[in-house]
Length: 256
Ligand SMILES: Nc1ncnc2c1ncn2[C@@H]1O[C@H](COP(=O)(O)OP(=O)(O)O)[C@@H](O)[C@H]1O
Ligand SMILES: [Mg+2]
Image (cartoon, rainbow, N blue to C red):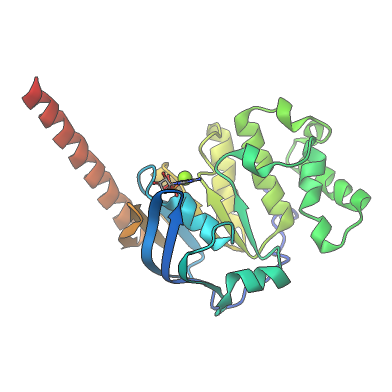
């Protein structure tokens, strides 16, 4: 996927300057209390989210794009309730889902990419033309008519990223976007993320992709365990994982 200035055009949806904020957010999902009074001001251009499975990374991203509703507390965008802002300007915050099958709606790649352009007022035909142009730019022209269901998981993840890129929301929320990508795909996505003009939040278990970010949040059982420059927070998380592994090994040895 060669990088091109055309596909990384300015966001169509400019963000209010004061960005995203959570104030005293309590979130329950099913039987799980995920967040109990979470406060965050998210103003940096690149923010990484790390932490064990179940820590709350996806829940946080879903809150920030309005897919989850907090039981109490506030999620604000530009100082205003996120749901009210989204009702007026639905394309402002875009989520790339952890599972591509939760995101993709249309049967073909071209239709899926064109979907992101319809809110911009383009005709169906013009939107599909732009989608084909983006694919061609990235050496993927032959993907346009292909059935999404006939692509591999990693290829579907690429389609999800291109959909977000073409829709150009003001803030991009990427939920484990590297998970199914091959090494060239990961390198291309990392390059796209570095070049994109928007604010981007990325959750990942591949720490090298966020280690150089100005800010990384380490989530642990719904709480912020560490919050700071990527290098320091990633190192702290790795040290904690190593310590836990050591403890579980010594317990096993003791039992043996
Ligand atoms: N759809 C759901 N229904 C009920 N509980 C959920 C659902 N999705 C996640 N959870 C619970 O919410 C907590 C946080 O999960 P999640 O945000 O998906 O974590 P992560 O993305 O860090 O792995 C976990 O305890 C998980 O079991
Ligand atoms: Mg998750």
